Length: 596
Ligand SMILES: [Zn+2]
Image (tube, rainbow, N blue to C red; front, top):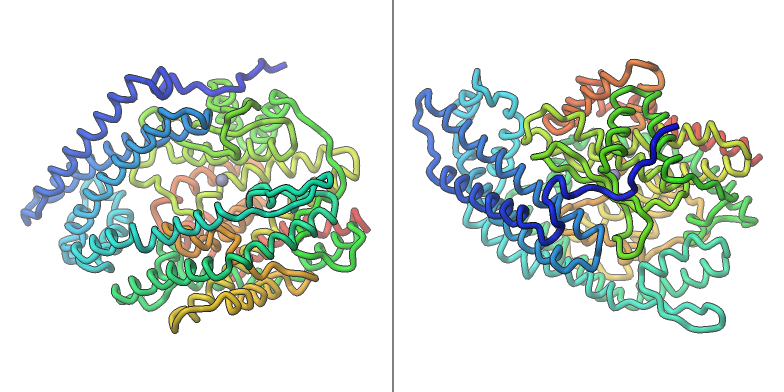
């Protein structure tokens, strides 16, 4: 029998003493010094047009790497402190400090990028040929290209300054509006007011009258604030479109596509395959309606539980289960997870004062991961644990890559985590004894496909039609409702009775200023990972080596190149996406069989 694993993490190996750590103070000072040195060298840096140029750029890049590691090390530590104890005021103060340091670093990077953008192509390529930073050609060229496509340094600085009270200001306005929303709800004959988050939890209540009651108040509340929300959304999009226009960018998908290093053709192909394969998911929704004794599902039934699941696993059992099944896929993955459990890389204890949810973070100077979650023994806890370990394995696989080649985009960020979850959920499905539990596990798994292939699809359809209209002027609340209703009907294949037209107001993702089109990368990541999983199943044991080689390259090439190099597929063609969606459909078919 395996030994007992600690349920709390060890942060003292990085900086002893938590949020009052003196070593961490020293680290912050060293980080500021490093930024200052980097800034000095960047400002001084210019071409000499001789063989020394490669040496100069290498020197700058070395400093760049040192600063990145220090800033991330600091950010990771503060994230852990804040999450383990939300009351830790010193940790919040440290967060402020780290944010300030990061902003300084960003300012220096803007100057650095400006210098890169001034070189002509011949000079630029010459800087890399035969140099020892050849491996950074993609990533530095990307910075150079982005800088070249923007306005002058002065104009971009002006935009950034105005964004604080304009663009980002409207983003914050959204939080203020949402914070003021209270949803009335009657429980035990007593009228209560719920926050948006509390009300959202009621959508998975097994009692339909509860779900329906909360939904009707929910729609009402968002509609009441509809004019404020519509103004906010219109100004965010308007700001973005004006900046794009000034830069001469015609396509509003340009920025989000470039952030995800992907072509528009790839995106279109992915959505086409999804649109062509709605039928099985519509059937699933119909069956779920039957199981709930309904003619047709409504929006507020989508999260209703089906079947029952009361199996619990202790932390040790969960850990052993994960290690066992990870090891069956490959020894590296299994050993990585075992090391994470053994060396106290995971904070899983179920106690008060912790932040909800889970995350993974990486300490680059120490080459160690930390995982945060609250483990209470449910199957979904085991999935979360596997998910976050998957993220950890991604950073582990990139171990010997240059720091600047480790910054993967959002659309591939979930590759390893989804993959790890698939291993564990498939194993759980195989081991479960009672049919009712199997149905419940399957339903839970299919819900993810519904979310990513239907819900996120609706968000993308809505945002696309909204941006097209917004180019010609403000879009009213009523029109936004209409656009959302159309998008939902299309994305859900008309499978629902009632929809959620004010969803454009209730979903935070439409108001996140740093990431435009905060939707399709999720769906891409899910199917991309499933496509790789399908490949792993087909190739059997020994696939791990190829898997690791693929993960290594996730942050230093486009997704099309990544897929072509490691999977020998063309992402602009349908076959890869078909192979991925087949796995989701297989789950649905099994579910339909079991519930026939
Ligand atoms: Zn994740």
